[in-house]
Image (cartoon, rainbow, N blue to C red):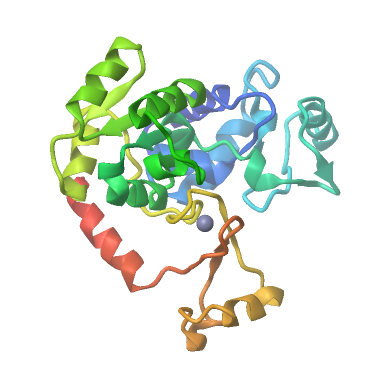
Length: 269
Ligand SMILES: [Zn+2]
């Protein structure tokens, strides 16, 4: 942990927008690559010399509890309420929706149809990524290049493409677009890094690789839900953690596929 750690924590706290919250663990992960430093983040936040100007009331516990505050927990809850955060008991309602994730919120992508596999990987790494096919929503899109450009401009996304023409068209319209040379997904991730983008290097259980929607942990009481999915190994139910996509219902767990990805991602470092 660097000696500037407390200052670095407060710099990140300044980036949390009004109406959003983040967690001690999330800040720890950004600064040290692991949530283990969450306690140190808590200590740095507790010593924030300017509690209102540096909005550390927007940092809460990873279970959604609002947690402590230098000016008192009641003040923390009042400040959050004034910013539109709904709190029940001492817990943030719609926690996932309200959660601000630094790396992910910094880089959102829209990809052309040559980059389906890269889209899947970016989603598993926690990056909000729309794929060309998602833009159609069942309808025929006449001019797909233009649809990608409009989506990127309206939604503050970076276009990723294998198409030089699209890249130059996007540049003319002032939309951020990266042309990727490789056809291979690990090489493409390396290209993104060479372009100066910080790509998450650990899989995250936040986003559905099929449809880009948020996934959430399956509660013990919901285990019947898992038994309805033929691809979920029955003997793992009750022993493993599972996540489910709110939109398409796909179930995820940290199995061998997950470990293989982690193995491959090591070469990015
Ligand atoms: Zn899904």
